[in-house]
Length: 196
Image (cartoon, rainbow, N blue to C red; front, side):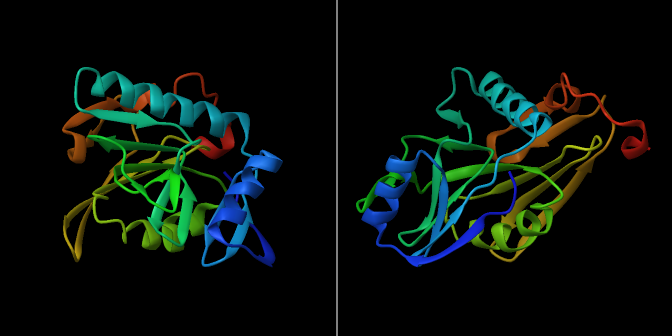
């Protein structure tokens, strides 16, 4: 999704949740400020859907579940984000103040766009790393085949892997699974100029 648009009014958590309910618009929330989430392209939506479908496939009959971009992620009691896909193992845990935001994802997926790429790679990843259960971050490029995986080794070390060939298997250590890169891009037609 695109970079969130800033709204300069300050909200309590209750007001923020009510704003989302009344408007039907997703907002990220941080320390009283709300940021409207911009819509994504058809390709962005397709790749995000493919990621959720593949995660659900590899997690079948396991104690983990894959969620789409409708699940709000709680970084803390005062910070909420939306990811394109996420995985939670065991029951979903919530903060008492907000029973709509999961606080225990192990894996988070973001589909990159030109408007959100630097935010997803930088500030958003930095925020996600504050989540104690968070162990793996997957970035999927939508203009050409490229998947980057960051896996948490310890508090200060993240392992980086890159996948660029459609015949590769994307290794996801946090859930002990592999996903075909080709399935993440199923149905996507790449522009000749951007895929070279």
